Length: 111
Image (tube, rainbow, N blue to C red; front, side, top):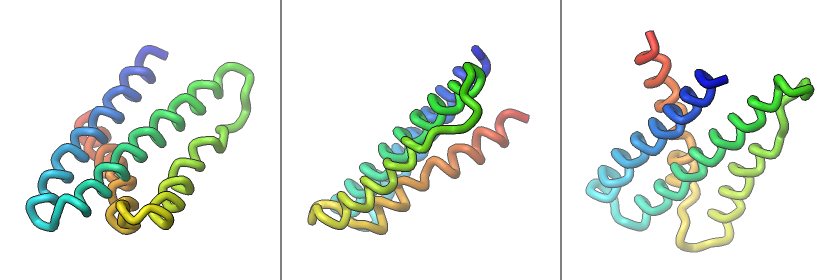
């Protein structure tokens, strides 16, 4: 279980690191409005990973399936982007998906 917790922390940190690199780069290339949407999406991706890890950790304690609570994160993100003029939908979704390169990066460094 300690290995799982360590992996969970590294994945979340890697997601935040990828977001910390992508947000300033986006601010330089585009503008702060798009960069802030990317940041919100990146934070939502980190939250999604955290909730998913909590759900997976419960599998060994009598639960036989992964919960679906973490699936609310992208739904709330899309609804927020649709209703709030401060959020752009596409950058927010791309920011949310920044956890994917972090997972790939972690898989490559674990070899």
